[in-house]
Length: 212
Image 1 (cartoon, rainbow, N blue to C red):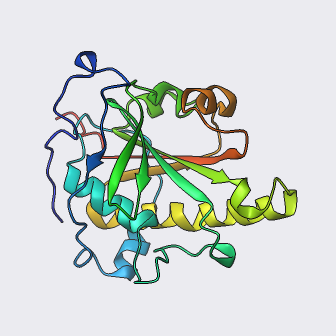
Image 2 (cartoon, rainbow, N blue to C red):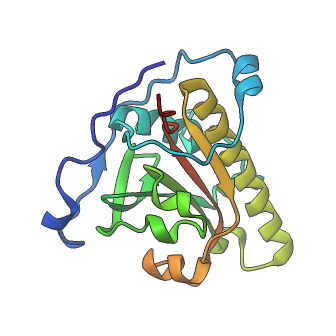
């Protein structure tokens, strides 16, 4: 397990504006190592108490690749997608701002330079988690807002979220999935289009250390 606590971005939030936020290039993800699958399955759990340590860019790159990265030359992903629609976008919310994961470029594309963690969930822990992953279905890629087709988006989100859980178990991180999100407020803050629907959210970070 590689644990680095280099801050994700080194520029204080107060010194930048949304117009000045730029694409964040991620390191090449490390796609080998980690705990054996059965050990990760045994240790997979939900955790809601997060410590202050930030994820390094390398750890974040590894997490995002595990969650929804490209693992084949034809552009297919680490999680299944109905008819390969790839309708799920992964938004990444940190203290420094909100980004959308660009798997092809291995980068974070900026959305807003505002700490939106309080909007990432109705539970208090969402505001403390170093990283909140927001799973957003682009219904246009599914051919419209058909309730039956939306079931695909929720199923695909579940596959992606389980990848995050297994990565967290392998790397000694905490993770928890939830449906409790103010979708209207968060969608507005993320400048989502009407065709984009927030499905679920997931917090990830290092566990809170017990007081000695």
